[in-house]
Amino acid sequence: MSTPAETLEALLRRQHPEQTDPPPFDPADTPAEPPPLFVTWFAEATEAGQPEPHTLSLATVDPENSPDVRTVTLRGADARGWRVATRSDSRKGHHLAATPKAALGFYWPARARPIRIRGPVVPASPEESRADLHARSTGALAAALTGHQSAPLAALDELADASRAAWRTAEADPERDVPQWTVYIVAATEVEFWQSDPARRHLRLAYRRPSPDTDTWTKHLLWP
Ligand SMILES: Cc1cc2nc3c(=O)[nH]c(=O)nc-3n(C[C@H](O)[C@H](O)[C@H](O)COP(=O)(O)O)c2cc1C
Image 1 (cartoon, rainbow, N blue to C red):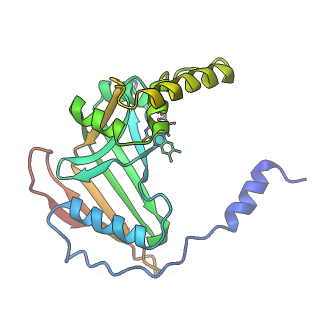
Image 2 (cartoon, rainbow, N blue to C red):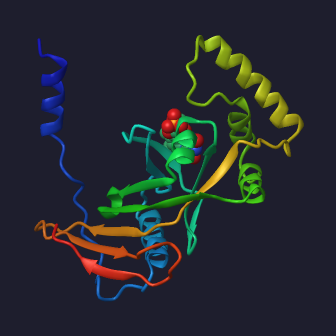
């Protein structure tokens, strides 16, 4: 009988990168700033049928400087930066309070394109965070209201009871505030666009700027 490790190795050997014809990408013909290129690539991933292109990895560091990562949902991206949202009293919220820096990772296999982003993080205004909370579904409000995110859970019944109560509140009072709900803006200083190449001459275009206070980005290619 095969061990779980052998089973995994056999499954891994059968995996291959998705074979897609790389879409046209000329690094010389790119905007001076990364957000417009991000929007173009996002739209192209959507058109190519990429499931959940707005799902990304958010990396933070804990107070001991150990990295941590989890999956979140993109709320928007513009000249201010890339926006995610969560409770400020979650594990990631505590990390961001202590070390307001993050890295983001997107991967869109339908276009064979990852994008990685790094930079300092600033919370959006309470008004913007409240608007984000109430632009979403009843379930999303109930989830935010349930609270205790990342705290140890003693029993599933406790979650069921808290969640049912949160759903009742969300349905009865859709404008209910959750003061901990926070939009965080990753004010990128580095953004890298990676385009797969069948001959493995992958294209890597990196944008950099010294700080979020400047709109002047430099661009350069990287060896794959
Ligand atoms: C597809 C997907 C999207 C998610 N989006 C969010 C999100 O936008 N905000 C959030 O707080 N958690 C989101 N989560 C849950 C997080 O992955 C994570 O479990 C939770 O935020 C606790 O993370 P933390 O303990 O590092 O704070 C999402 C999970 C999945 C699978």
